[in-house]
Image 1 (cartoon, rainbow, N blue to C red):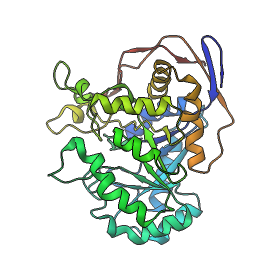
Image 2 (cartoon, rainbow, N blue to C red):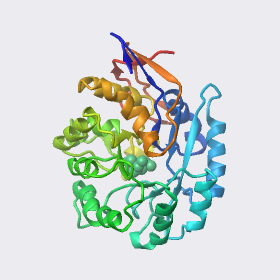
Image 3 (cartoon, rainbow, N blue to C red):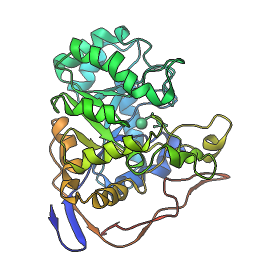
Length: 349
Ligand code: NCD
Ligand code: ZN
């Protein structure tokens, strides 16, 4: 990375965790991801989840059609694991490059996870196959059980599910997605980054659970895994500021219509695509760690996935950037993370 006084040039980043939804929402949100990122790992948790090669091909087509032709954007598709997923489907999808990875949602852990996996032993043969072929497993790492406090779901998942899973399949490549705790940082750091890595979102780096309850409840800051205590936020910030190559960019941008965010059963998810990349830049600057920005945004991810690092670069300039206020959908709208706020860095066009 070459850094001048008020300019940064880095390799074009990728976003390794993105929810684009489909149809009308997809059409309106996709350009924000395409503006900043070359590639994005597309989460499969549509209402009708992407559980097969056939569905994935159709969804990818829909994404490319929705994308503005100005952006050379590459969607990297994932398969939603259910108790009926077959090793054959995954192996075929992986070798034909239809899927880059498969996603494990514990049953009823988050948005559209009703078809998720109830017991990890239900997918043993699938995991065995993935380990053999080198297909990454992406995990929503929360233990779902009414007796577990929502703030402890991630650390309980590591203890009760991830550790036994790793012992059983030591060569399985795993990404623990959107990590939120000190325990996760420590756990990941202990292992070989080719087999275990973690993505970190801008909102978990910028906020902690106090923000969710400041001046009243803030439905727009409700996401899963839920924001944690400040000590965990600090641990995440320290992890990226140390330049550790176990961690890479995964924004978890997750648009929901306003009416569904503020309803009596508010949806979890933060739509951060318009500001995610510039938020990361701000955080690295605050941590005096800009020298590690490029590794986190553009290098550690492709290395984990055994993919080439992008050839293009992007230029950032220290110039105020006003985050989009809202996207309108007839009478409804989607309000992005940091709506209307100003960040210090912009993309040079
Ligand atoms: C995501 C969504 O809305 O699809 N929500 C969220 O709070 N992060 C799903 C997920 O990644 O958990
Ligand atoms: Zn997500």
